[in-house]
Length: 275
Image (tube, rainbow, N blue to C red; front, side):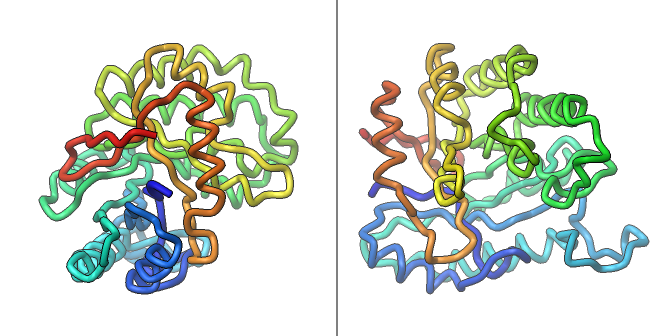
């Protein structure tokens, strides 16, 4: 297996395992490249008290602490990985809400690359916690893709993460019609391509009851048709049991769609590996 470039450790409030435990698991699996990309929710970069809020398990406050702890532990492990290439990354959530913090972290010389993602819309909780019956789903998803476009048009990411995260927890995810959103999705793809960034092919949904990839094969094919060539492969794992889960299947799906290479980043420079 080539890579798993989106993984979370105990530094992320919703994950577990030390970096050393992840490295041990990766070597057991024969994984060639792994990145640690713990959550840094930019709109919650400081402790809850800074925002006049009460600490809550529903909000990932203190992204700064998460970032520093994750980077320090990852760097300390890089010389003790055997044949594994361990990359130091970060997942920057909600870049449009705090672009200056995003810029500072993206330019931190210690990290290899940054994933850009949207987990929350302005003034709302993470999609995991939303009360969907009380919302207009079409408006919600429209706003979601508008925010993802803003990420894609920014300069503070290398990989655009889980394109359809906003659909992940919908009551009828499989039945939701994406057709009205295709124009903005294509605009997202064009922005990623123009900036020579990569699109993440995320396999976290392969362990769900109704298995899916993010993006699905239809959207990934459209990205390819528009000229997209750079993809990364990931499980978005939060526990070592799912590190590189069904990664061989993900690699094969990418080949069948016509991708010949996958990409990883070192100090924000893309490196291609044949599939």
